[in-house]
Image (cartoon, rainbow, N blue to C red; front, side):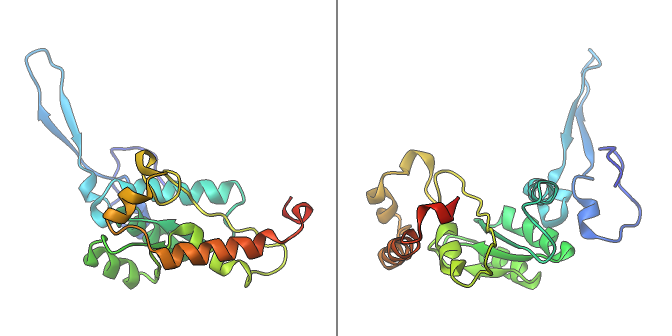
Amino acid sequence: MNNDPLHRPAIVRQVSELIGATPLFALCRPESDARLLLKLEQFNPTGTAKTRMARQMVIDAEERGLLRTGGRIIESTSGSTGLGLAVVAAERGYTFTAVVDHHVARDKLRAMQAMGTELGSAGGVVYEVLTRMTSLAPGTTMVALINDGGEKYLDTVSDDDWMSARDLLAPDVEREVDELLAKLRRVAPEALA
């Protein structure tokens, strides 16, 4: 991969080779010879700068040994990061689960599914991980990416009334998460280390 930000390959073999190879547009150049360049990120695959971030998240997890061949990526997404992760996961042979709620644009969901993405429930990343814990092989470690205190925004992290008013809480899912946590916590503390 060429790291020159101005290089856009003529022919590529993988979609991810196009990530970040977006054109620069010179918007203006005043008499002072200063200039304003716009990096046109909409020319990334999936049309967003978040594709670049998604690729880097996967590369970082691979380099740190957290993501290995045949691994699974689970991410809470409203679409753009999920599209980027779908591209990278499909190319690298990972299973990708996008945890979404009913606010996600349907076209983004269809695009992710077309790349092999599994869609998770509105219960969130923690819910998806917890429901899979008992089916994991002994000694397996699962890494869940948590942002903004889980699936809640930082300023509303403790405000379930705010979340309920916007139909962002599912009481039955929250009850199930509590039950799953109670079962998993019965494991001896030394086994968690």
